[in-house]
Amino acid sequence: MRALVVGASAGVGRALCEALGARGAALLLVASDVRDLDALAAHLRLVYRVEVQTVVADARCVGECVEQVGKAAAVFGVIDSLYFPIGASHAEDRGLLGIERASAILNTNLTVVIGLVTHFLPHLLTQQRTRIVGFGSIAAIRGRKTNVVYSAAKRGLESYFESLRHLTANTGMRVQFYRLGYVATQQSFGQRLLFPTVTPQQVAKKVLCNIDKDMGKIFFPRYWALIALAVSWVPWPIYKKLDF
Image (cartoon, rainbow, N blue to C red; front, side, top):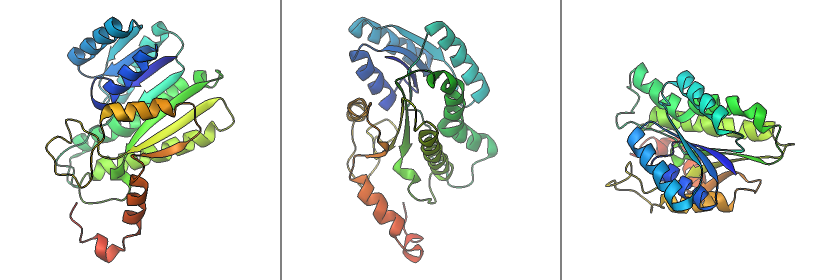
């Protein structure tokens, strides 16, 4: 396996790199923080003896990011798997963000993923066994007054992956999309959450267990499927009074 991991240096991305490295995968890692990225790459090379290359790129600048990753991939060699554990939110995302900050959220969560998939898809379709894995959020279940742009971006990403799965249905490609519940990361640390968190390592383990299955959209943990159903059916007169 030769994998591209975008958003590699922390949280689910870092755990996924560890899990892939343990399987002997060659890795092309993309993140914005050079210190975290270099430290992770050195660790993976030392512990798992795998090939690792890195790209320091800002996902908010989509064109530049795609160009940088494309150039690095040309040197890295044939890639058969794309993983996108990338995302960013903003504490003030309550409908009043300026265009610059709103665009940054949209680009990081949605547009850069589309740009990179578009770049690699023609070549992936020429191979017999390939994978594209995206990561969404239960924040996209139903729009609410917090995480307004973030939720819209993740819902758009979910729709994009559904289309991508349909587009590649008769090929050797597996397209999967994880609707993640609360994950124990720096973003969730210290928050009062309604339900338990899962660790990034648990997410990574689940992804690799399912990697060859034709599963489409997956809630993780699975109980979020029931919660999502309940939330989607709450009548508007009640829903509008909820404060979350």
